[in-house]
Length: 345
Image (cartoon, rainbow, N blue to C red):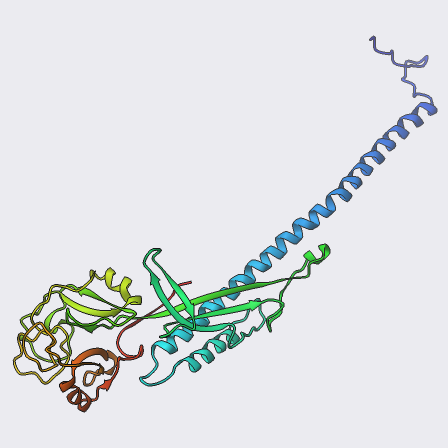
């Protein structure tokens, strides 16, 4: 197509198109601009609900995430504080009421999203027993089971809790104003004190025999003698099943060792050059049998070192001597000897 010649006048100057043509051109430009603006407006109207949805998801999901973190932090702190009371309670004291109140106090002290929260004393603070599931390697918590060695604390922001549900900021556009959020934490105490035992001792429910390497003789007792012929040998000890993972990590093996001479459960301080009584302190002399003498569990408190109190098994004739030295009948509570506190769930 040949280009149109430029329109000129007689003097050679370019002439302007007629005003009608100029008007048509300007109107075309204005119409195209209006069309573009109209298209953008339509796209904005269509995209606005999507943008609002993304804003609601971003803000509200972030809020719920932070709320969940605060609830979990509060539950962890409360569970650890409660099990600490249980672990270090004195002998003959029921620690559960004080432990429950401590858990509630820690819940109140920790704010969730800047607001105070509370917990139901019975529903949200539950004591029970945690036992190792050997098949899975995890601890299983059973509420209200005895003897108590664990506590589960739940902190809730739900419709049926005193704290109410967690508020949402944008989701109310879509008909949701609140969301239920909660977090639980379970803590347990494991007694790492042990009862030095004889190979023939009966094992109570919830306890087990293990072979502790290199702990014979005076390695685990509390007297001052140094002439035990079993010193440095493997020794059979009785522990709570919940403490089994700890002792296995220290090199112990499940089951009793071969019976050895020396002080297999020695913790008395009234011997005279003993060197072969394998169930020492029950008065039946050297040997590997019980000789029919009844045995009693007592809590032995080493003189000047009450924090190292530990459970031992002694023969009936030796009980009065231990009582005279400040020991008490029955196993030590968790507050005596070594313990480990840990979160399990």
